Image 1 (spheres, rainbow, N blue to C red):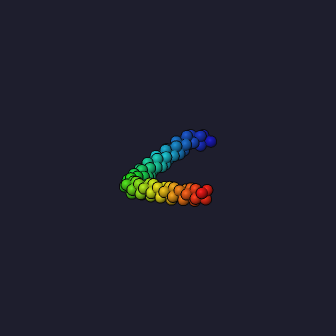
Image 2: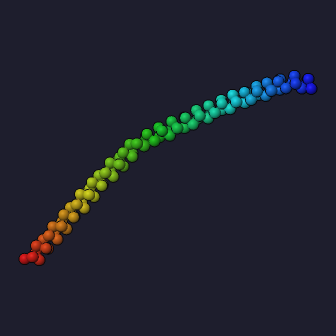
Length: 93
């Protein structure tokens, strides 16, 4: 029993050392993974920023089409209102 009691702290110390080494290896691997993920995110960010000009151009074209559509329909609406008003005035006379 005395030999086991003396060996137990040595075994626990060895297990703690092994655990520390494993944790250090895991932390280093996590740092490597985070660095790789960071480089991927940077690469994606550069590619998205290169497409910003295209998206701005599409947005401008969309705004011009919207403005033109509103102008056309407002003109058609005015013509229809004018036609209806003339028709009502003709009916009154």
